[in-house]
Image (tube, rainbow, N blue to C red; front, side):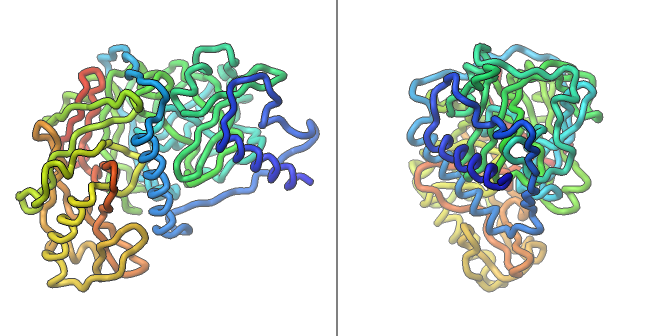
Length: 458
């Protein structure tokens, strides 16, 4: 009977994702069927070791399809502008780690929530606005996570937010899903759904936020933070506790820590890097001027004001632009930490593919496509490093990403092949996390510009 309740609840939540309902005083979908019932949590393990790379790439494609629909069709019904962020002249830095050790192709930071503070691995996502983490009692479902699940009842400073609060009214803009209200408590219920069929549903709450113990004493320590307390969490989150949303929105982590910008460096995604760290997420204006960044304009789509758009103007191979028309690059382009593989327009991909094949195929035999990766060769990445040409992504104003072999290629060890870490996209382009690794990236939101500084994570 207990398992039947879980299955019925999950089906109900899935239907709510497909047909969101407006805010109303309805019976909560999170309400327990019996006050004496204890719902068992069945661990859901998604890891890089147990889940093949093909699954992660499939999920990556599903995320991209969702972003494509959102960008092409318009995420909101009416035009909006990004929120005006308060100025923060301080700076705090948090270690940023490859998610391989917790079963994710993305990157995580450890943040403290509650009094006393309990630290949790949160996946950083510049394409998401609402931050959320799994919370006890996990009324419907919590997946297995690396840290103990947050228990709001054990925090002296946690509080649920009601449907009458401004934060609840802001959920539609942050999640593109209407909030709901719990009938007996008027508690605000959020739905955060993602393009890969992952989702989190729970109560909107507020508690004290603490940065990682390794962080400085700058802004962001010991302040109230609004986040989702997830009671039904399904999908490919690895063993992370939840999502840290860094998009431009009133409810995002960016806005709430009173920061006018942030910067990060994604460490190389290898098992060794995932255990040793090496990356960082820095908050505040001083994080934007500590390195010799080259900047490109940060653009805004009024129908998708939370995403980070920029203009890709060229791709170079061995210092020479690909032989394609400049018009080939004129598609909406975003910088996104939550996408793994970069998407570029078809004409540019075909030309890049030809250049890489010409350089590599003389020494390494071509192999069949692997999942969404069409251009593959037999051999290890380390063996091909000397054969691949230098590739650069050039943005408006001259800023760019100079790609090392590890940024350009993706190794599939179990198949003994290495593939070009790009794929084509018909209507949008996405600069993904593989191509950003070991590059310092600055989001100067106050001045609407994005900067890049090579040289590894400092």
